[in-house]
Image (tube, rainbow, N blue to C red; front, top):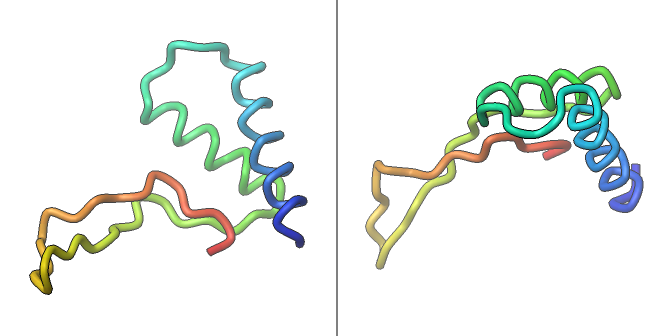
Length: 72
């Protein structure tokens, strides 16, 4: 799948969730529904993937987390 195709699939999934549920949901609900929609479209994803935070060679334990990582 090309980057363009992947981008179109992700945007299409987000639009599908928005059209079905509308605005104003909690972020956790949006994430759950979008993850489901992406999976139904055959996309591999990881949820709540930690991202290390390094400051001047010091790795901090208070890392950030990606909500969704799609197709690596």
